[in-house]
Length: 356
Image (cartoon, rainbow, N blue to C red; front, side, top):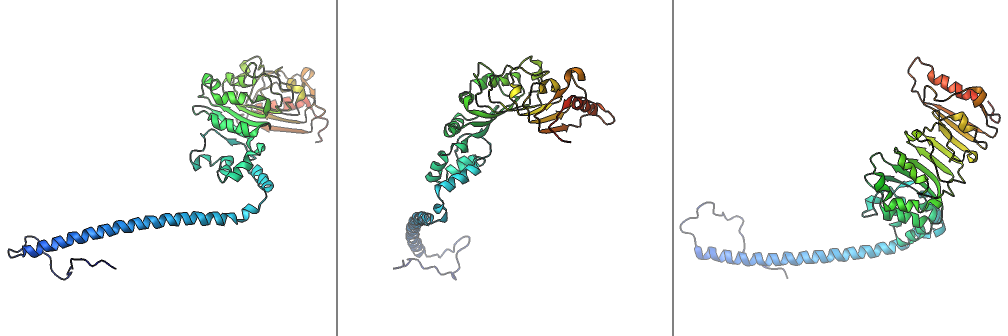
């Protein structure tokens, strides 16, 4: 039964404004105040009751919604997809190299560029499938800078990719402290898996960054097939690189890397694909590449820093099937240095297996 208020308000009755008249009925006014306070208490209690009832209904609604969502999910078409098909889909989605410098997934947005974390957060079934697919965890990039890679995230990728080979992209920024890097657990974790490295893209600007490929930091790279060295402008001041043994290396990309001659620690005779810049002594290097199938040369110098006498530098690559020459327009207008350098190199090279 609805509450009947003690006080009836006459909206048409004029209320006092300003100073009340001297003949005001104090007894009647006090009764109005007493009845009104009682009505306010009743209204407040009723509002509290209704609020509690609203909260209770909202909670029941949330429980029912979750209950129905679970039943609705149980009959969703996606659950009809066999786990084997889901595994193929996950493998396709996670086939690209991802950068894993951020900390572990603290909130959903942190993993926006990590499909592995997004897929694993959907449900335990998907997470279990993903964790059973080591190929989904083999390709990743890390950057050692003021913001170091998070050790637990690195270790998760290393553990879940085991025993598959790794495809790594490691960057050492210019502002990085080498001593802090080699003491960091993420660096140690990567070095500890050197026996699984199959591809390595290494970018750095300091000579000590090459130590990741040297003894005694590592003993060897027994499975490494592709190596890309990028950004090492000053490496040429060192007489030798002293790289650790790489018995399976067959693809070398020496980008922006200017040694003055063929480094003896590089297994040139194994290489099937080679990418070099013209500042390298190209003819001498190519003379060691007896099994080369593919060659890319980047011309970015106006003059060569080595002799190009045909009697001592001419090279014939019998196995070569692909040759690419790229020119960087750094020569001022009207000068012929770039074209002359290109002609000097090309005149020294012979590729009998390539048809013009």
